[in-house]
Length: 437
View 1 (cartoon, helix red, strand yellow):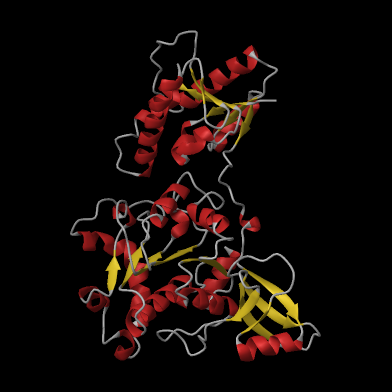
View 2 (view 1 turned 60 degrees about the vertical axis):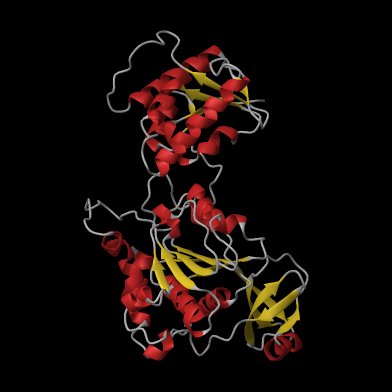
């Protein structure tokens, strides 16, 4: 049976393409939601961009008929703008929660008019879902783009092979891949089938059905040596130019940002593969914002990029020859080796032959991540690092952020690799805090 889905404002602002995400069912948009969206359209933010997209989409649908009567959608469903028929010209009071109240009133009326056709209120507002349930209405979260953390692809597994296969992988650099379902560039811990305790690390090549030996990173990269098998996996992905998209997930202190910066400097300075190291982070604060920051673009970016500068300062503490004689971050910037840029200015750009690192990618929406990926030019490597347990952006959570979105959609793409870092290496205190608090 076809269902009717009544959408809240926050669903459309979170994903403007939600209007087309309900297959052959009927999508209902309260006119008050459109009025609320109109208040965002002038903002030069992600919400403003989404609001403008929704307005253009709805305006384009008017060519198919009257929105008040319902128009067909490409997926086989329909869209209709609904309102309170008792007094459509009434000016609604702007008290807090007025739109939520109107949505519930409309939902009650629609359910009463056609009790045989299921009606679902779709909202990301947990309190509105509670109010709807208390009124006898069915309410759901918008879960089309939800990827549960416990179901997310980890990028690694374990395989049991014979001693001959392990020896071939260690000495010859490759061995045959056993039967089974594997993902491109999936990392494996190969164990001795006979339980002798012999192990070796490898990466799966699904095209030639091989397990290949990892890049030798035992001597370290820019003075950083891997401390566990997941960090070996991460450095292999970061140092292989054939892998152009790398996602590194891990809780605080696992070394994801430091490893990415070390690999980037290595391939820009020591073994030139890319022209620049481009670093960006979402400019969204944790907790309450301190307000306007005066100064130039570089001075404004200082507080946002300080974690990057801290990691770079650690890498610069070693021999200056390792980083081309640079003694400070300013040296790297002045010589054109390092570029630090806010993601706000990335739209419209084309970024060729660069090692691009986007840190704190868990604070990006799926639409923002798509914008970043479509900026990548020829011979550019894009690295996304993030911790889905630390979300600072409203309207997304640990299951709906853009970082998880990329991991889930690119796990079967040979150009991409994903690594999950589990063990914290910053300090014993940091590891305890990440696990206990």
